[in-house]
Amino acid sequence: MIVSFADVVVVYDNFPALAGASFEVASGEIVLLQGPNGAGKTTLLRACAGLLPIARGTATVLGCDLSLERYAVRAKVGLLGHANGLFQDLTVAENMAFWSRLIGASDRDVETAMQIMGLSDRLSATRVASLSAGQRRRCALATLIVRRAQLWLLDEPHAGLDSQGRDELDKTLRSAREAGATVVFASHEIDRAQNLATRSLTVVGGVVTAS
Amino acid sequence: MKNISGIKVAKGKVVSAVLLKDLRIELRSRVVTNQVLPFAGLVMVMFAFALDNDDVLERVAGGLIWLATLFSLFMIVQRSFAIDTADGALDSLRVAGIDLSAVFFGKAIALALKLIALEIVLICGAVLLYRVELSANGLVLLVTCVLCATSGLAFVGTLYGGLTAGAKGRETLLPLLLLPVVAPVLIAATRATEAAFGSGGAQTSEGWAWVGLLTVFAAVFGVGGSLAFGPLIDE
Image (tube, rainbow over all chains, first blue to last red; front, side):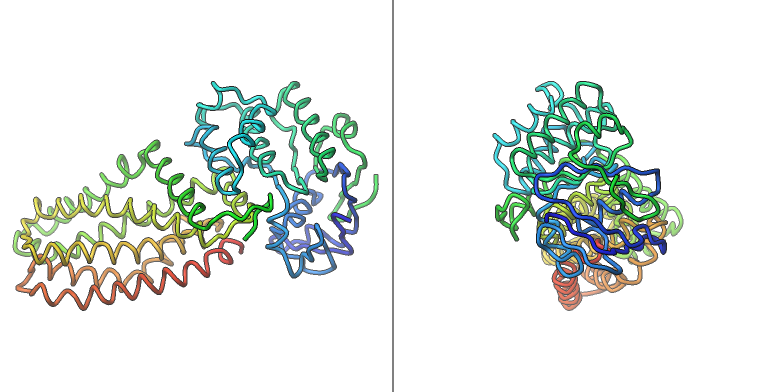
């Protein structure tokens, strides 16, 4: 299993945001997390990325025990949260160059990722602060593609994208899956997300159930 | 440490990537040159108006330079981490699978370079406004003092900036936490600078002991900061 949670409790701001979550994700799946706002979807994704400590229960991600090897997990997953993780005063190309340099990706990897996300030469020279919300999202997704993660954790990845951008994103996630990646994503756009996902999970009150 | 793609990236590459990123953002946004520098200059001028006595100003010039530097440090540190937290880049750095001590050094060096640029202007301002004099020996002492004090301030500023980056009320929390810690730098740098200027009849040779203290401070916070930075920004 790529992800395995058993009775996991995660406390966030003195509140049990995950209250005994149990679920598994197998290799190559695209799993949709659905549920109302505040249900615990974001917490679950951040816990999977090793960003939040597990208060109780057992959780493994990519073979790493989250209670003991939270830092090791981080080196294996790609997380795109509500924020884009970009530097507003740098151009798209400079942001891509920064992240690719950190992870040792090649220029060719960067070019390919930018092509996939439709970041043209004109856009690549534009400061992120001047981009639309959708263009920023595309840039953030391009940084994730460069990283070639084994597990993609995406929080509302379609948010802010236009129709073409959403189609491109779906295509990218399917390609990533064919290349061996596993995807877990949260979305409120149920119709599109269900078409993309191979399986759905519902999160309500910090508890995960199969949809 | 191997990253997400299984490639081992040298620590030096991460340091230089973070350093260049921070400097590039400063060159583009010009926050230090357009906001912090005028603020520090105003502090120096206001002190000159408030004290309004050439002898007193000449004697306290060293302290005023380092007080203005400390006030500016708070602004530069907050700005340095605001660019990382504004759009969640700090979280992305945490999950990038990189050595966070390299991020610490990259940010500290960038901070030190900005501070040195600021201090050069402040020292020139003190020479003009407060009419302090600087001998050749004094200049050597002053340059060494600036390098050591700035290293200490940059390390401790980066450490505490990381600590407060995700905290509520970080704008007020940072000075509250940082001021007591940097008090030894303020005292030692002031004494060394007074010796360099010969303020109040001080000899240049008297300043080197204070430079020694600044070196120890910088070394302690350089090593301690690189070890503590990762766990601190995680909490």
